[in-house]
Length: 185
Image (cartoon, helix red, strand yellow):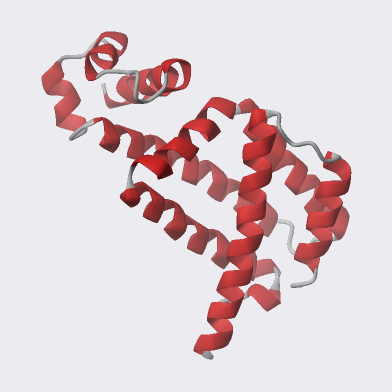
């Protein structure tokens, strides 16, 4: 039932919008009772949080794909960057929904910030100048900030790709991002 509810919520939130979708709409689409809804989720925001967790997990896999490259070169990183954008185009509705999610609830924003910390740790596996496993606190925070800025660039590219609003050449942008990231190798 939980899976049916999450799938129905994904579809309705993307098609109609989160604010325009009522709990009643969700109950009908998932073919569940009100009691079942509240067994799994406290409210609509809690359901949106579950969708955010799924989105964060997908993005985590993107960063893990990058980590699997070992010591990547510029072209491999550029190809990875493009793939993130292409995947975001395929998931355009979810990407837009996640932008709304962080605006609706501060707890959801904190989830995304914590996720960036995890992505940063993954980046540190391949890019030694982003490795956060160092004892010097100030340098660790500088590396964390640098990683977060790079991650925000990835998220912005993904978001713009999803919306179809990316107006720069994707190949040039991908290689430029890759060269920026390779500075931390």
